Image: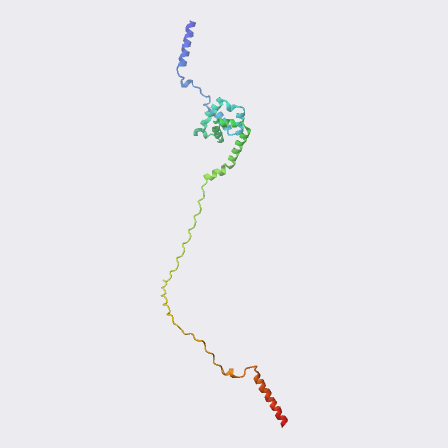
Length: 215
């Protein structure tokens, strides 16, 4: 009896192992996966902090093949139906970088952690101004007023061509020396300042004195 019962139990176990698992036998979360969803969401958003990534690297979590596979599995958060729950989008950026072995090894160094933190700060600092440059419509340049066309020059009457002057025929003219000018009547009088008039006046005065003495 005992041998028969043991054999029947072994056969039932073999039948269950050989048959594919039905949907009723698959594992189901007691809360329909809500708790798992919240835990994975919290962990993914922790990756937005470079200090936390540095902590994982220094404690050799990023060298564990199982943990690396888990990071690859978490990439489903980049899908549209899940990304809407992300409040810190930098976590998806760092999640993508963590798929690279060089980045995982570099984040173990404190200097690289500080560098990533500074770059993240500068992104937050200039994000609004950089985004507004692409969102706000750019002002169109003011149209340049067309310059007025220059007024046409007043029409001038046509200039009549001047007829050429005929050349003057060459003539031979005899050149004679100018004749001496004729003397005017005044030039025959005694010139002013001459000694001739003075002698006459003196001689007439001497004659008068002689006449008085004789008389």
